[in-house]
Amino acid sequence: MDADTRKKIAAWSSVIWSGALAATKLVVGLMTGSLGILSEALHSALDLVAAGGTVYAVKVSARPADEDHPYGHGKVENLMALGETLLLLATAAWVIIEACERLMSDDPAALTVTFSYWAFGIIILSIVVDINRSRMLRRVAKETRSAALEADAAHFTTDIWSSSAVLLGITGAAVAGMTVEGSWLHWLLIRADVFASLVVAALILHVCRELGVQSINNLMDKANGEAAAQIRSAMAERMPTYPVSKLRVRESGARYYVDMEVQVPHDLHVDTAHEIADAIEALVADTLEGAEAFIHMTPAQSLPETPEFLIRRLALTHRFGVHGLLLLHTDDGRFIVAVDLELPPGATMAAWQVAVEAFRKEVLRNLKADVVALHVEPDLRHLPSFDTPLPADWEEQIRATLIRRGAPLPTRMAIHTRGSERLCLIYIPREPALTVEESHSRLTKLNKKLTEKLPSFARFMVTYEET
Image (tube, rainbow, N blue to C red; front, side):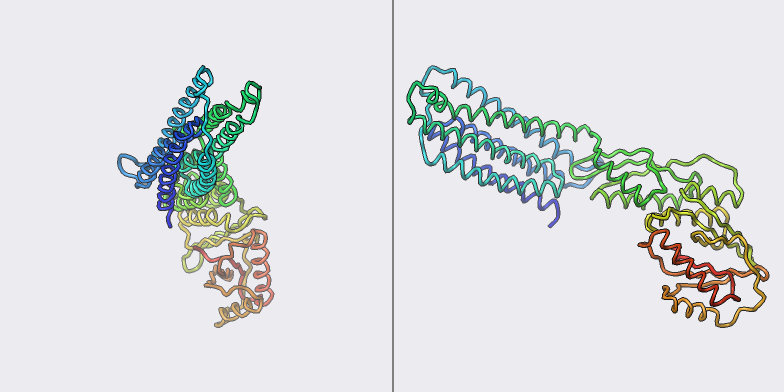
């Protein structure tokens, strides 16, 4: 069942129960003359009106965005919650005025409450219903982030406490006849129902304040610090190479809209920038369900370019360093770039995957290289010479060595030469769960094992398959 359907079911249940409770309380209130029960009846009647408005608000908020409402129709729930707040204020005002008139009246009948088991029964029933309804509405409101349902849940929660106050009030009025007329206890108990109605009004005013402030804040797009903190934390953990300069989060109903300014290399290719933006948008949507993000990229300042300096600068702008760099123009006219990257040892490979791939593509584009091989730490600045010709079965020997080592089978292999110098690139499947330190250890051991077993082949570099 989707969120909109759950919201509609919850909203209609509020209409049904509010109508039933309002009618029953009104009948019992008129029978007993209890101001507390009559105030509860009015409260439930207004809840019925509000619940009907909630049904309408939930229906409208489910409409998709259009040309006139590019951010959707979610704000209607905040408007409805504000409307419910105003209705509750009117209820509280009526109860306070009526209570004051009864307290100041000289007519003893104004304070008379007729004892009835019906009064106790309807109030107890109301409390039971309100407890169940408030729990259900609060759960659905939390799951669907519905302001209108949250307002309904607050109403039913208020009803629990106000009904409890009324129960005490009619109990006091019922036992007033057992006390000595003219005593302070008799004076207090005979007015217990009126005092209970004032407690109801006070509780309503308290809820009005909370609902009103929340509704106005949402309508005025008050900053959501908690949501922003979640996004910053996720970016720092999963994409630390792109610091967040500015971040704004606004809400429209159950949807988040996020504006972000992110620092990226100044000469980022438009295709790479698009891929990075897509990755950030996916991260935001994963962090805040249903969030829609707009990403603005802030470029770094321009710097002079040479092949080696360009590679080191690109690495620096992606927040990692290089300590090994090889630019290889092969005999067959291919340009091979091999780079050792320095990444934080405690970071996972998954956290740096987007940055590393973006760096690789930028080097490819800027240097017009045929191959850019990335690795951690081994120094490939100088290649040794190999006088022995490669055997015909060199691929099978490399594969057999890796199998005996328990390494993943290579997805592809290639040997690049410059005179007597040979560089063998071996690609294995990605292992994103490993930390940088674990990844470096594994690849280093594989390089070492290949060099020990096949010393006359080439300089080995085991790396992960490209995306």
